[in-house]
Amino acid sequence: MPFLLAILGVLGAAAFWWYRMKAMNEAAREVADVVGRVQGNIRRKKLRKQAALSPLTAIDNPVVAAATLITAIVSEQGPILPQREAVIREVISGISDGQKKTDEAVVYAKWAAAQIDDTTIVIDKLAPFLRERLDPHEREDLLQMLNRVAKGGEQSLKIPDQRILRLRQKLGFEVN
Image (tube, rainbow, N blue to C red; front, top):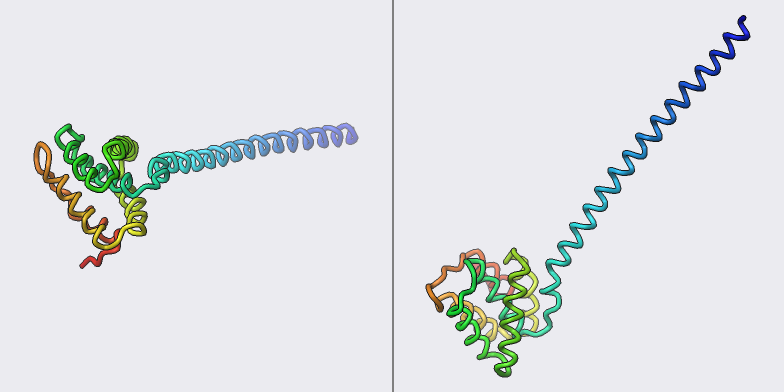
């Protein structure tokens, strides 16, 4: 009889530990699944952020960069209507090498500005690019072009002071 009780005890203990190991295995799988999902979310967020920046990273021409920067800042106030687009074309034609280059720059600028919903990102990416390629006088002309576009069109736009301040900082001007 004690021998039978010992066997039942050993079988009971084995069943208990088998059940515990199975439960621990399931818990470990669940933790691994959660970790995998978190890592996947982080990777997807990183990819979305890179995709959002891709229209800006493809810019290698100062004229296109200026057009995109101006268009993004102005479009923050609302959609670009035909009269405002005409003013953008007018100011960009003053720095481009012809009508075809102007059209390409404005079309790309409108597309890129529509792809990126945060104007701060546009300023942070394009202003340093322009600072490297433009002399101080040309950078001042860029600010004047932005001002002309904001004042032209259907109605005058008020560009927020923090946008102008950030743009001036990123372009390398001293800001008080």
